[in-house]
Amino acid sequence: MQKAYGGKKDVVGGFTPEQRFFLGWARVWHDVSTPEDVRTQVLTDEHSPSHWRINGPMSNLKEFRDAWGCKDGDAMTRPADQLVRIW
Image (cartoon, rainbow, N blue to C red):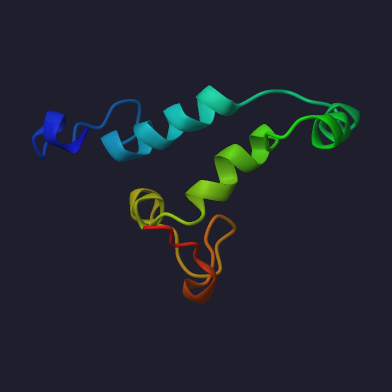
């Protein structure tokens, strides 16, 4: 995505390209579920509920923090010693 934009920071609808990327991710996984639906899903489906498919990974990404200007202590950030690193 960054290569395609060639360093341009076109703001569309008040959002930078990086912010639009993360909004797109959230829109893909967003759904509306009752607490009962979520409970049933947790008990019967091996996949995580959509809330955690959105917020879980994003709270571990430096790119997310940078895109939204998150600071330590904000709701969508984790302390550096609790960040998940896989690669």
